[in-house]
Length: 279
Picture (tube, one colour):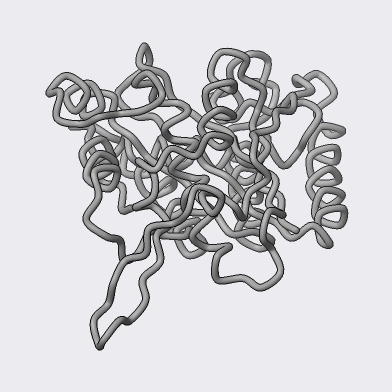
């Protein structure tokens, strides 16, 4: 059994980049790693009793919302430590999107996009599709992956519906091929096989109740800031190096989509991704 903890970073009012990222962890290691994350977080907070009790990465790393009581170098080191923990114990799944590219793709009318053209559940479905693709290669894991998101009452119902009803539009994310008469042929899954390695709904938890969701928030923010810096005209070299280094570290454990059939959903996700994001 697997558990994926997912969070996101970015808003259209803040910039062009939206990133959703998750950590996939084996159930039998979950208690150990949760305890490891909890201890790291509680130990850090114990040194700074005047700091907030919940770690929201954007506010934390920028010294906002009470985090100015922690020195900048210490904040950067703790963010590095969280990325090290994520890389050490999990597989990373993610999607980095450009709001501008998303708006353009939706406006063309070229794509028959399910889910009322809502980028949040569509990003969640992409991550779920990658997890489905990965789990299809694992023995004895059918229907045994739980996907847990930071609570979002607006978008979560759409994502839960997406997983439950399993629209064939998403098939290209996880279709398998087989050899028929010497040729590779993509198999169309039966309805009951769509997302069949995932428990057929999405679960939500408050981030302050889960250190793993807070780690997913940190991973999302690192990727978001890295993507933002790749397209900014003026940047500080030190900041660019810091985030590109962390992103490179995370990428070593990030799952890619790999070989896929020709499918509308693949074309759509390629059209809306940030230019610097590799599917």
